[in-house]
Length: 206
View 1 (cartoon, one colour):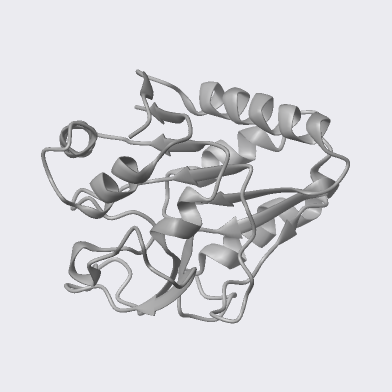
View 2: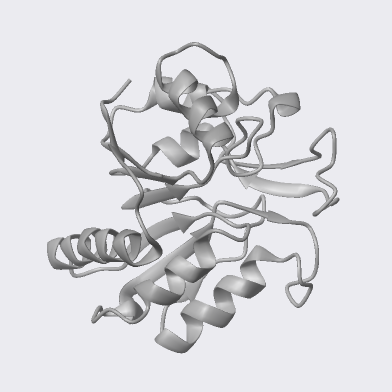
């Protein structure tokens, strides 16, 4: 397990500034595209709005949703649709997750976490494996979250670990407790499995 850096009480602007710095470093280190994966849910979108005000060459950015609900992109529950609405006007490419996609190495894997320890759409009932051979899975959370009762498509733990660095944004005391226990190896939730397999830098904003 990699060492994790915890940054307490980080505002959206602070996180956006950190992300912009990491993207800037990646853009400077290569002449090709810079590829990241980002989470869904309500937390990331205000941060993304802040990020897009920074002076970066977003035309070289390729954005992968870490997961999505299996709904049309114009559905209000679609992460991909929301990401397109934000990133594409800035010139970035947003990928649609399908099980046929060839998942690349990510410069940055940005993740959220649920109170049950799920990451992307890798819920505890799906028993995600660090040695999963597939990079993308279709799956059904059980129980289905009432706010988004849909089947899912998700990057797997190995796909997320194939990254230069990992960032989490964890909001709320309950989630922080789950994350800390996972980091210490005191539970076997999906987030704990990912952290146990991480060899790259991990940064967690709270």
